[in-house]
Length: 163
Image (cartoon, rainbow, N blue to C red):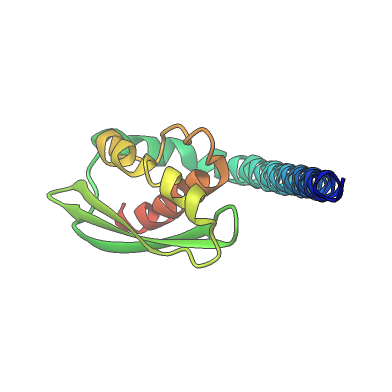
């Protein structure tokens, strides 16, 4: 009888441990989901802010657009190394753009201290697209929209010096 009681207690302890562990996992999943949704919300807010800024800048640049279009159509930039900065998902992103023989040859992310590492790693996939296009007129990277937008805008800021 005593052996049966000990076995029953062991089974009860194991069942309680499993239920408790399951509760912890469920709690962690909910916390992770909340963090993910918060990140998406911040990303959407930043995208909206950037879009509003671009619309505002677009209105002021319309008069200069025709002059810039003729320069950009040639595709030639002044040789040198140029730095630019723009806001990404977590904060400012600084890039260094190298131009040789009038073409973009290298883009390096110099600083992105507040960027989430996973987003930044994904966003850096935009760099070959920028070099191939020889301009900042490329699509963002899905899943890292704000970080890749930050890189694109920083490259655009650097290229403004190279024209």
